[in-house]
Length: 266
Image 1 (cartoon, rainbow, N blue to C red):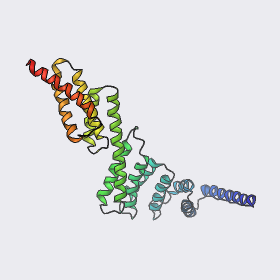
Image 2: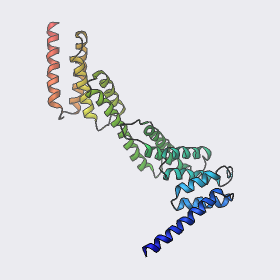
Image 3: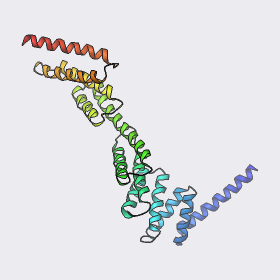
Image 4: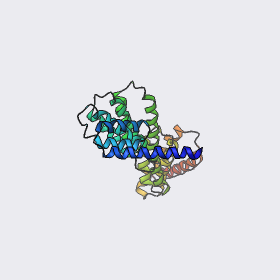
């Protein structure tokens, strides 16, 4: 029985391949259009895309042009070619701004960029683009049923950007490039004030400023110790029970010893 089913499947496959090859050479554009949609509905996105690519200029300016553009974009999306898909959805909106598909396609621009968003350690231009596209969608369709889902995607991407900023700043800190770390950590706090890494970032910022003070030339020590002290007060006010409390207290006492000695000398 299995052999018979396999034989039937092979016959169907060969017939399908033969039909597809004939379509590629055919000039019956109406039939090609019909079969392309059939292939799409069957989940054969590559064949559907190839056929649609071959007839898109033929139907340019006709009633079918919009459907072809729509299906081409979704073929690329379903083939996981998200960059191409995003561009095709953008092109659709530009060409058919009044289309009934316009809202869906604007959402898909952001969603394709969201799907193409890389791991946090990599360049995040696509992630930032997706955030902008989703915000554009929400501005244009504030009452959309997709709003909650989009906000979830945006939170996920903001967390990714926050994590990348945290990793970059932590890298400077761990390599003891405290001046660069201070700048990166401050930017991290400014750009992502609600980050889940906030406590550690504030701790590293305090330590970076402390180490810069310790290793400064004498004429810069007073200012830098005071900067570190200010950072300490910010931290303990926000995280009085922090796991970093013991280390910070030791450094705080060292700062005070220096400041007392400085004042005594004055």
